[in-house]
Length: 212
Image (cartoon, rainbow, N blue to C red; front, side, top):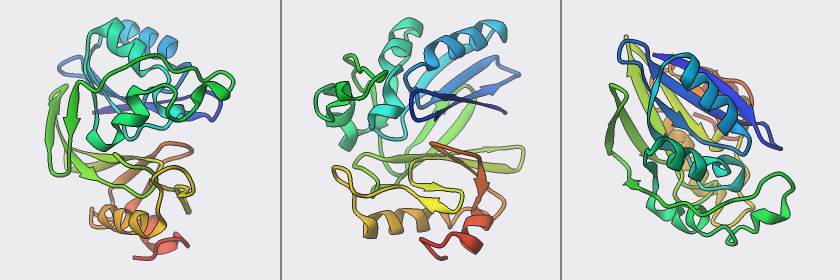
């Protein structure tokens, strides 16, 4: 498993290209505005076939190029059903008010829910429902070669957690969701929507917002 990080858009949102080098297939996790060019170039350079776009949640800074990538590569957008208003209605979150972050029309092709196991690019990807930052938030767990990693969107960051003052946010709910992530092995790598990766063990020990 190879993980490449492409910070993109006005908020440096992380797009993650996760590929299986043996199969030459990949999945994209989150698709911020501006990611299309870099992702397209990397897929071509590495002779990779894109299998799906997985969205951790529907906030404008995570989905700006999802529709374009889905159409260009003829792959489904996979997301939580409760995030449909954010993802499918460009006016719902007034994204056009943010310079450089226009949203076009897109549709969820595959609805994922808690406990689902997705099979893309040779990986078995477990879905964990993690609301609190916004409705429809999902974490995606990969296991490969005895190692675990989880892509969490804006649920938890190194030493911090996601904001809860936007539509559908709630701190008590977010706290419960973070504790779901804390059940993973301490060695599990956490890949957040912004900033550097961290680990479950590090956040359980030091995160001041949600204690283990």
